[in-house]
Image 1 (cartoon, helix red, strand yellow):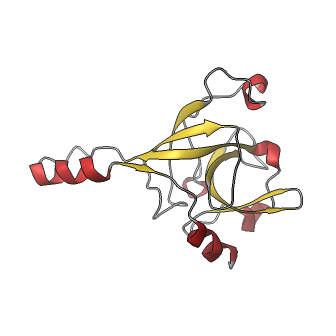
Image 2 (spheres, rainbow, N blue to C red; image 1 turned 45 degrees about the vertical axis):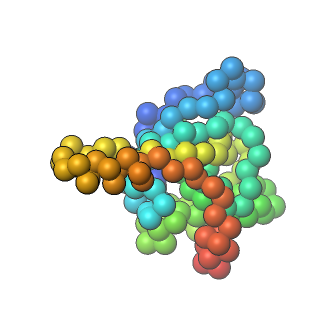
Image 3 (tube, rainbow, N blue to C red; image 1 turned 45 degrees about the horizontal axis):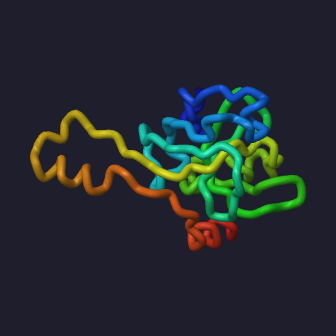
Amino acid sequence: MEERTGEVPGMPELSQESERGRSPAPFGLAEVTGPSMVPTLQHGDQLLVRYGGIVRPGDIVVLRHPFQQDLLVVKRAVERREGGWWVLGDNPYAGGDSTDYGVVPQELVLGRAWLRVRPFKAGQRSPLAVLGWAVSAVRPLLGDRSASRRLRAR
């Protein structure tokens, strides 16, 4: 898999029924790979994703890649355009977003990331390092309107 696209391995495959929002479990976990969402998300971060629902500009979303629909990617929904969403990675040097493949149709946007959990690194042994991880490991992913305006300018 290409690291720069921000793909999400381990993401559960969704049946057509769950993609239409009738799934009994509308939440799932996903692991981030690649640098496309740095600094917001790091390689190895876990995301709590809510499938379906309303997406607003600034939200971090999980979507099917428009040209390779078995590949799931994580991007920021910047704005609605005719035909779907314009999505960008927070890292302007990583690529693999709407600047490469254009507007993403609404039906390919699967869900919105609500929470980020940063994994504990094995080398963090000091009490101060463990405390620092505990304080910063879990963060809600709120729609960042300032980042949305900054990214829209690209």
